[in-house]
Each structure stands twice: as structure tokens, then as C-alpha cells.
Amino acid sequence: MKTSARNIFNGAISALKSGTVNAEVIIALSGGDQLVAVITQESVKTLELTVGTQVIALVKAPWVMLMTEPSGIRLSARNCLAGTVKSVEVGAVNAEVALTLPGGTEITAIITRDSVHELGLKPGVAATAVIKASNVILGVPA
Amino acid sequence: MKTSARNIFNGAISALKSGTVNAEVIIALSGGDQLVAVITQESVKTLELTVGTQVIALVKAPWVMLMTEPSGIRLSARNCLAGTVKSVEVGAVNAEVALTLPGGTEITAIITRDSVHELGLKPGVAATAVIKASNVILGVPA
Amino acid sequence: MKTSARNIFNGAISALKSGTVNAEVIIALSGGDQLVAVITQESVKTLELTVGTQVIALVKAPWVMLMTEPSGIRLSARNCLAGTVKSVEVGAVNAEVALTLPGGTEITAIITRDSVHELGLKPGVAATAVIKASNVILGVPA
Image (cartoon, each protein chain N blue to C red):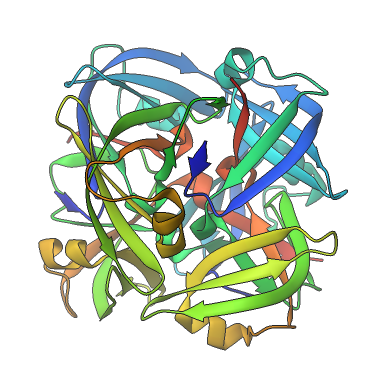
């Protein structure tokens, strides 16, 4: 499998909460961080997900928000991963920004060119990647 | 805090419905409009959200769909905000379109360049910003 | 109605599962495929959705992930539509890729330019469009 998702994480399910329609899945990433995904309960059944299952988590770059100076705010987004800007590639409207997390994981975000300027993003700057749990896709070997 | 989200709204929670996994939060915006967010129930608890809590709502520009000639259709998206195009900036593939709402609030959307042409978007044209509740991130002071 | 959503599907609701906050709606598309949407239960009530209701389903292009060589993986994303690349238009950061499904339906995705190269996407190549159910907006006539 190859996907257009710029972000692929590996981990094992550490907790699972089932609702009628959706389920919340917590994944312990290899690097020590954790990632939260909300998927349908039907997928939990179809993929036979349970605590301990090895999964990959996929996140498209436009679904990642970046934040600087995170003190003073708490967000409802379940995934807030603090790292350092590794590279910035600017287009006419959008820009692609890559962060490196302390554990070495890389996260790519597509944000507007204006945001790059307003946040002063350039290699070496501290930034946090924010990902809503509902924007995480999980995969298991077939 | 500074974020790459082009859209930041201020308001107070006016209603809250909790499910097992998710919760629906209705926010009365300062300008008189209302915004609906679906976040995890865990975030409701962690952020101690309740009716009356002052929050900010963050929405990335690619998560905003634009619509013209809205008569004749009703959408499942809970947030449909009618306004007027303020500016259009076109790139090779995408375009950034800013709307002004009647109350003065500005909303920015990233849509394809083709859509700008098909919808005839230019300053002064009436357009509606459509945002799914699951794409709204809430924040409270730390 | 005209929208900036590059993807519009027509179909009838074939199944509906209601939770407290969200509901899962399964749509039988005209072309024979099926599409799954997760919307709020409030929208199910407001739009008076029930089995048999004719709906349109809207999906913005940045919410579509593309995948090649799909064997070996099962994803939590409920919508995986296999087709063939029809066209690729590349910008500085992003690219717009159109797929044709076997039934003739077209699907447009915005992915990064880097992904186009890594997946070797060009007209004629087999690719699968992956769409999370929570990123599908439904509409009914007013």
C-alpha cells in the first residue's frame, strides 16, 4: 500500500471506547507519544480492533493545524504534538511545513502561506501540530 | 497562542449534548450567529466545558466549503453562514476566498481555482460558508 | 445551489443508525457503489432523513486521500472507491487528481505534489479514493 497521506504513524491500541455510531481509539505510538482516533464502531468490528492490535494511523497534511506559543490555551483537539520546524516550502496560496517531534517522528502540515508569515515559521522554530481525532484513519494488515 | 487556523470565532456555550464518545456543543457567537461543534466527550470533561463557558472556535480554511444560490437545498452541515465575498487570491490549483458576514466576522476558505470560476466568486458576490460541526476545534484559556 | 465541493454524488439512503450525537447514514449511489456518511443526529431530524430518502452527498477534494497498491491493508475509512486516474494538474505545493470509477463517476482529490510523484500518479494508473464518513455532507431538496 502507498497513500497520499503525508503522515503515517505506527503503534498499538492501548484503549478503546465504543459508542453506538463512533468509537474512540487510543494508540501508543512507537516513539512514546499517543494518538487518539475517532472512527465508526462498524470499523472497529470489521477490522477486529482490540487493545493490543498493531495499527497504522494516517493523517492527510491539510488536516494538521499548526500552533506556536501554545501556553495559555487548552484545545478540544485530542492530538497536540510539540516539535520543531524542519522545513517550509511555500506556494502561491498554500505552504507545506514539516515538523520533527522529539522522538524523531516527522509531521507534515499544509497551511496557508499567510499563516507561515504570521507564525514566523522557519527551520528551528518550536511549533505544535494539532490534529482532531476524527481526522485520523486507521489501518491494519489485510 | 498563535495558530495556522484562518478562522477564529469567540463565543459562549449555549447548549451541550453528551454522547458516549462525542458531544455536540452549541456556541453563541459574539456577532449573534451560532456555531455547532462536535468534539469528544473526553474533551468536554478535560476542558470542563459547560453552558456559559467562554470558548474560541478554530476552523482551518480547507475545511470550509463555499456555496452560492443556496435556495432549493438543505444541508446536513450544521454551520451555514451567509455573507459576501471580500477577496479572492488565486494560485495554480487552489484559491483563498474571504467572506464577510453581516455582523462583520470574516471567514476564509481554501477551495479549488476551478470552483472560483464555476461559482463566479469575486468581491461583492453573495456566498455561504459551510462548515461541518466535526471540523470545529474548541479552545479555552489554560 | 452551486458549491465549491468538487465531489457530488446522488443516491438514496439504504440504512440509518442513530446515536445520541451522531448518526451513520448509508447511501446507495446511482452507479451501484455505496457511500457512508456520519452526520449529527440533529441533522437527521431536521432534514427528515429516513431509508429511501433521495440525497446528494458532497465531499471537498482535500478530504479525499488517494492510495495505490491497496492489497495488504484494511482501513477504518468507510469509503474506499477504486478507479483509474483521469488527469493530474500539479501546482507548487498541491496537485488536483481526478479519478474515474468503473460506473463512470468522477472523484477529485487534492493531494501534495510530492505524493503525486511517490505514488506515480498519471492518467491510466489504478488508484483508490479514500474518504472518511465524517467528511461527507448530505443535502436534500428544500
